[in-house]
Image (cartoon, rainbow, N blue to C red; front, side, top):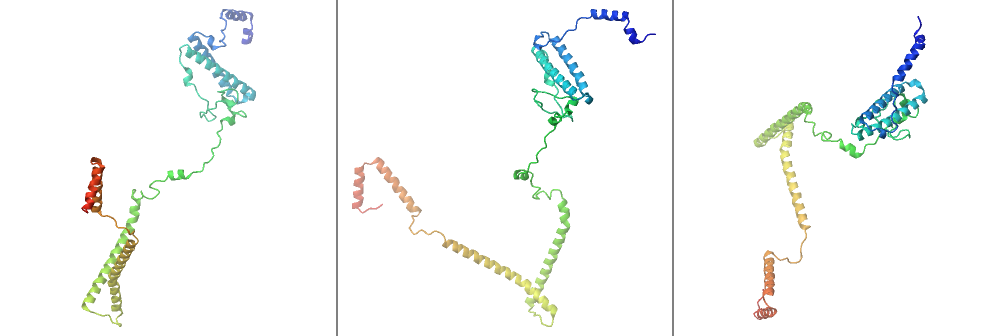
Length: 311
């Protein structure tokens, strides 16, 4: 039995293949210019054909073992097909079809992040890299982000983060500080109460001793200590009184000094009644000048002068 290659090369099989090729219609070429197409369905078909070619070449360019030259050629061909696809999409919109460019994908880096590289290689606006072409020498640097320079914080940035918590105004809201301060507060209150009670007891004993006329002797140290404590307690009130008197004396002296430093007018100033009388006379003169003649005013002045009348 002959092998498959021998069967395909037989005269009968070649004759049958030739007849099938003759029956097929000649392959229609895609128009060089998208503006030559007048049918929307045809334009959509040519766009689909371009997409299939782009998909095949993008799948091929994923192979890193093709070599640098082959990868660059494939990337150029893909970009050429992309530009052609854009022409057909604009032609479809002109013919009344959908706008496919609205949801077109964007270029991504090696990690899959979308980047905006309008003209990375100087080959025209919108040149893109695919697959292994992104790792070629001189291309990887286009997708690397420059390191961000550490900016020194300004005084405004520092103060912007400061709030009431920084100054301790919110320490009492969580209740932690109250629990920590409660024992210390209770202890301080107990000490203050005990001291007040001790002073009150000494004050009462001292008052009793003063009223009864008892005097501590030198041979009784306990009585001497009690007398000294009583004297200290009694004189506390007197010292407070003396301090208050001194404070009042200082305030009185300050007031006297301030009075002496006040401005003193050496010219007699008119009082309120004098000012009112002068205002009334001024208004009378204005009314007389408005409703009487100059001759009448002069006669009135002469009469007042003869009668020795002064306003």
